[in-house]
Amino acid sequence: MALFHMLYLSRSTRDWTMAELAQLVAYSQRRNEQDGLTGLLLYGRGHFLQLLEGRRQPLLLTYDRIARDARHTDIELLLDGPIPARVFEGWAMGLLNVDQSGEVDRDRFDRLIAAFGPRQEPQAENALALSLLKEFRAHATARPAATRLPDLA
Ligand code: FAD
Image 1: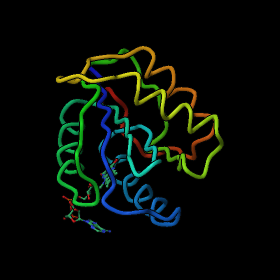
Image 2: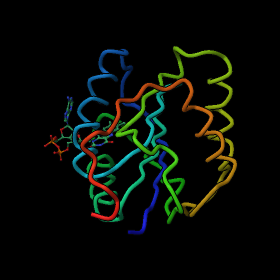
Image 3: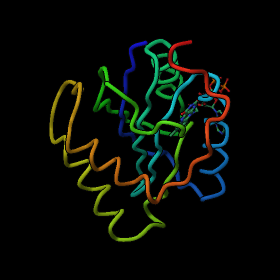
Image 4: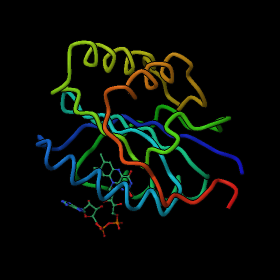
């Protein structure tokens, strides 16, 4: 079954505590497990950067729900295209609060955003962005997606 990814950048409409972020991610993990979606949510400098991976239809439906959520605004789709494999296999949604992380993560977060530069249309892939996202795996928290449906289902 073909896999796709979507990465967006948005501006939070308020400050989030770690407890609030954890609650949002726990909810997202439950829904994403049912939808076979994986990914990573980064929060920092008043922005969200979220990578979502999975089959096309649940991915689009979830992105549409997220895009309508009033808890963030100015959503900019940076990546949208097919992928050969998941970067966050087994992560129903990872979380990293970059503001509370080290300087290395904050620098990585800035480089990740800068990897896209000014553009009009989302890119299908961006090798630098994906390699930076992979580097976050060591520091983010995740819960195994034990009940995630297999991609071939
Ligand atoms: P309902 O539950 O009917 O809610 C309707 C609206 O109410 C939502 O759009 C939202 O604006 C608002 N709302 C819901 N809960 C709260 C709350 N606790 N406080 C304030 N307003 C609220 N969902 C996923 O399934 N997977 C994800 O990976 C995911 N990632 C997210 C990342 C971010 C940065 C944000 C802000 C939200 C994310 N969500 C995610 C949640 C998603 O945006 C929807 O709120 C959720 O999926 C419920 O959708 P619904 O249509 O059933 O909305």
